[in-house]
Image (tube, rainbow, N blue to C red; front, top):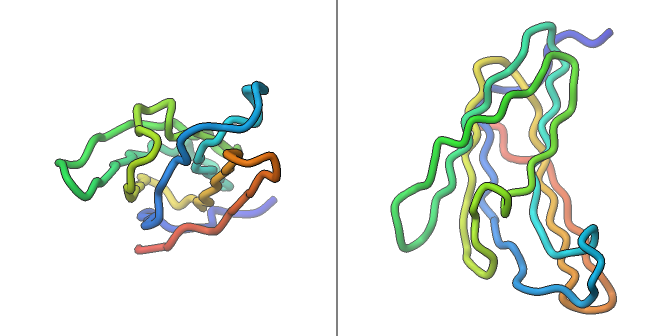
Length: 121
C-alpha cells in the first residue's frame, strides 16, 4: 500500500463555473470540482477557501477526507456562483493530492478540462 503522498497546501488559480448547459441531464451540467486523494493512514481535514476579484474570500469550507480514500466536491454545491472568476486555496492537516476539473457543457460538444492543482507546500 502507498504511504502518505502529496502536500498540505494546494492552489487552483483558474476557477470559473460556466453558466448554463446545453442539455437537461443533471450529470452533464456545467460544473467544477476538486478531487482530493488521501493515501495516508490518517483522516484528513481540508479547509477550502474561495477567493474572488471583487469581494472578500469565502470559507473555510471544511471537507473531511477519510484515510486511503478519494473525495470529490463540486464547487457550486459550496455556493460558488457560475459565471464568476475565482480561485481556491485548500489546506489539509495531512498530505493529500488535489486535482481540479471543469465540465463546460454550454455547447452540444462538451469540453472537459482537468489538471493537478499547484502544490504550494
